[in-house]
Amino acid sequence: MKPSPNLGPIGRAAAFAPSNIALTKYWGKRNSRINLPLSSSISVTLSELGSFTIVEPQADLRQDVMLVDDKPLDDAGLVKVRRVLDEIRAMSGSSLYAGLRSVNTVAAAQGMASSASAFAALATAASAAYGLRLDSAALSRLARTGSGSASRSIDGGYVLWQRGEKDDGSDSFATQRFAADHWPMRILIAHASGGRKSVSSTLGMAQSKTDSLLFRSWIERCDHDVVALENAIENKDFSTFADLVEGNALAMHGTMLAGQPALLYWRPVTLAVIAAVRELRKDGAECCFTIDAGASVVILCSPQDARPVSEVLSEIDGIEQVIQTRIGPGARLVEAPGGLPHA
Image (cartoon, rainbow, N blue to C red; front, side):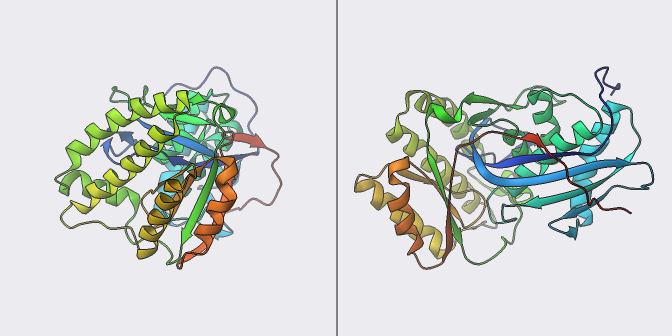
């Protein structure tokens, strides 16, 4: 790529990016190298949970170095980080390597989209550090190259990630469809005990595409659900919203179960939370669940129902904690302190 004609100074920059929760799921790629999805997806951006990342290009570095939660990033993680940084260096015309530090408030490998916030924060901070002035669409495309779901964490509120049609991915990025205050909701994250999942989302996605008898119908389901869900959000139709969100999550996990071998992320506590949420809704609470690739469950509910729903979930055996947040803004630059790693 040619260097951007709109460059600022190169120097330290920091960003915070929130995680996001997919309401219709991203589970299937048409291009795994640059994370192009087979279907569009809709998500909500979380308010406080995410990643804080500092990036500083340094003339004395001979390679990129990164600390994540005060530990050196492993080689597999660095490959993805360097993919994003190499794209930024090509755009800026700089050959400088960078020192990076990231702190996360989202648990990794538990189905909570920790990679979404991580790569959205990286794209936002690194582009500024290398002097690039990119709009949200360009940042979304850039974040997507590190993690597909990261494309949805650049903007806040209710976000639509378009699958796109072009092979280069230029038309596959996410944009806000509705602001957070269009339909305020509370987000409850019921963390299941048991630690990290054994199969990564990347590997699980690839297995489902090649091994599941239901995969083709799953993608067709997503194409329908995205259109219907956007309409339900626009009209604030909670009954339809709940049916679509829960149905899409269950269809994704059903697709995994139809694989050979079957892929199961759930634990007994997952089913217990599902049953509790459905019973609460039957009793009049506005609440519904969704589940990413993990055992933990996310519940979306009205502000007035958040506390009683949270109290019920906290009593379920196997739930470590219930975290409450809300729909919030997307990635943004923040003040950058010192203390970056050196080679």
